[in-house]
Each structure stands twice: as structure tokens, then as C-alpha cells.
Length: 518
Image 1 (cartoon, rainbow, N blue to C red):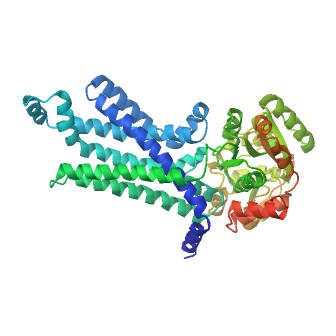
Image 2 (cartoon, helix red, strand yellow; image 1 turned 90 degrees about the vertical axis):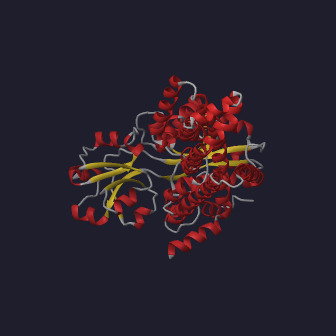
Image 3 (cartoon, helix red, strand yellow; image 1 turned 30 degrees about the vertical axis):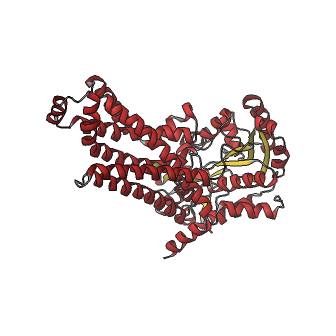
């Protein structure tokens, strides 16, 4: 009952946010569906006449269909970047198979006797196709179209992984902030959208099978359905918030964690409240720095919160530097010279990596440091996010300093580590020092006794081209310097992750408290 109450409360409190995501989802889906339909039906008709090309094209689309969708989004990041374009291409690729296959199958299975009869009556090739073959194939084609539409709407939920928005963003944000009601709202919204589309197309399919006034009813249903899509598209574009048409705009991005959502909202609200610049939010981008940094260099993102240790070790791949002030100065210099990016300020808190395990286990095993854990590591299962096993400042480097020999290592989403620990899937996790769930779950944070992890001071990185275009941003962002202590960030995270408040609300209260809003 509590989850049900939270469900309706979430809808009421975040209706503007959810409506914006709904519009994004519809526009992305409609754009992909239109392109898929044009390419798919044209290709299906074309391969009807060529067996050689038929085998090549059907083989290719079948192969592409087997590639995991999440991998496909990632593969196109170096080629297209993040955002709408990437999502559109991936959705089109996945949607082609049912349309091409059903178009070819429907046209190919028309009874040859009917085609011969039409030719015998003097019909031209176009008349045979348009009057006989196409109408008889239409139910099969429509069946493939129906499958494609439902699949596209569902798959569009993954578009938030690469910053393309849509209802998947609500699901992803819910996972990242441990908010079950937000996950439920996003999931149900996607399901309902797909269901409505499925029922609508199903009604058209049914009408095509009706013998009474078959042609008239078919035309009427197709006309009304097409008109309905156009009206929906028009209303969506008319009522959606200004986007690319806005003259002064910047793109703010974040990684997929509660803390990053909060920092992204702080930056966005600070800018929009104190300037006439519109902020486009691309929050929760999968892969974090590994995808955001290249997007910054391409100009797809203007500003995002980053951590000094990540930038130094993961981006620059420089040797460890323990003095946090020296590290920051070196970062400012190197980022400006190599990337034309500006470290605008440090926010004041240090969110360093650590290792954590349940207090009861740590007490029974008498483990307080990384070294003590290493000695007994063969008794434990270790869990961490995927990129931790790839980072220079992650497990590989850590294992060189501490001789860990865990019983097993589990790779999982960054926001599922605590659930895995709670469910006893893993025994030890890597964590961030400002994570509120450490306190909630009564975990013991172990001491990095050999000082492997450097400082991970949070700061704000912005493109110098953006600063040149909007010079007022430099002084504005500088006002955030040292405004958030370790304990303050821990409390902000607690409000989102444990008390289930929205990052938008938490950020607004923070800015008001520090008198940073007009």
C-alpha cells in the first residue's frame, strides 16, 4: 500500500517532469517508426525481385537484431556521439527486421493464380501490385508493423542511457536514486504507451479482415489512424518546452548517481535563475566520464560535475598525486592545454573511493583496513560497478598495492551494489565516502592504509568555448566554490536516496539556503 501511495504521489509531484519525458519518448518513437516504415517497406518490396539481395539484406538485419541493444547504443557513441541521433539510429536498426521480413513475406505469399488472373485481364504491372498484391499482403505487413511499433516504444526506454531522454530516464533515475516509485511510474508509462499503440494497430488489423464494406472501412481506419498520429505529434511539439530553437542554451550532463543528479540540478537551476540561458539537461549518462568527456570535446555537452582523482587517473592516466591542491592546479593547467576545458571551481567535498562491508562481519573478522581485508579476501565475494574493473584507479591498480584474492568478483550496476550486499550476493563492495547508504545499512568503511586512492574532490568542468560565448557563467559558477562540505553532501544524498525527495527539490533548497537564487 505504501508503494501505491508513493506511486500516485510521485505522479502528482513530478507531473511536469514526467510529461516532458513522455513528450520526448513519443517524439523519439514516432521519428524512428516513420523512418523504419519508409525504409522497411521499400526494402521489402525491392528484395521481392532479387534473391541475391534478399539473402544479403535479411541476413544482415537478422545479424544486427542479435546484437544486445545496450551494446549497440555504446558502439555508436564514437561515431555519432550521445543523445537523440544515436538513439534514433539504434531504434531504426532494431525495427527494420519485422517490417522488411513481413513486407516481403506478405507480398511473396499472394496466390499466383490471382496475379495471373489480373494479368490476363490486361492489368499493368503497377495495377497488379497496387490492386491485387498490396491489398492482399497488407494484413501481414501490418502485423510486422505492429510488432515493430511496440518494440520501438519499449526499446526507446533505453535511450536515456546515452542522454536521449524519454521515459526510461525516470526508470534509470529511480534505480540510481533507490526510488522504487519512480521506477514503477516510468515502467508503467512505457507499458501503457506500448499497449495503446498495440490496441490501435490491432483495431486496424481487425478492420482489414472484415468482409462487410472492407475497402471503405480499411481506408477510413487507416486515414483516422494516420491523422491521429499527426495530431499527436503536432500537440506534442506545440506543448513541449522550447529546445533547440532557444537562442541561448547550454547542455549540462551528469553521471548516473544520486549525487551527480543533485549537482546537475544545482548547476542548472543556478544558471537558469541568474541568467537568460536555457539549460538542456542530459542527466544520468551511462558510462559516466568515459562517455561524457568525449562528448565535451565534441561540443555535445558544455558543463558537468567531475572528480579530480577520476580526471587525473582515468582521463589523463597520470601517476598518482596525493596533494589535493597540487593535483587541482595540475588538472587546471593540463585540461586547458590538452582539451580547452576549464576547471571552474571545486565544490568543497572529497568523494573518494573506499571499501565497505557489514559492520557485524567486519567486527567478527576484526577487519578495519584494506590490508587486513586482503589477508582474508579469499573468504569474501567482491562487488563493484563495471567500469571500476577497467579504471586505472580501480580494481587492477588496487590489487597491485593490496594482494586481494577474492572468492569471486561480481560486476553490476553502480546503484545495485548496496542491494547486492543486502541480499548477500556479495560480501564487500567499493563505495563512495559521501554515500548515504553506508550509514543507513550500518557498513564499516575500511581504511586505505597504503593510501592508494587519491583525492576525489568534486568540481565543475566547462568548455572554454562556452565561457567565451557566455562569460557571465565563469563568475556565476565560481559562487559554488567550497559551498558543499563532506557532511553537507552526505546529507543531500540522504534526502534523495533515503527520504526519496527529488534532486530538483533538494538542489533548490540548497541554493536558497546559500542565497544563490534571485
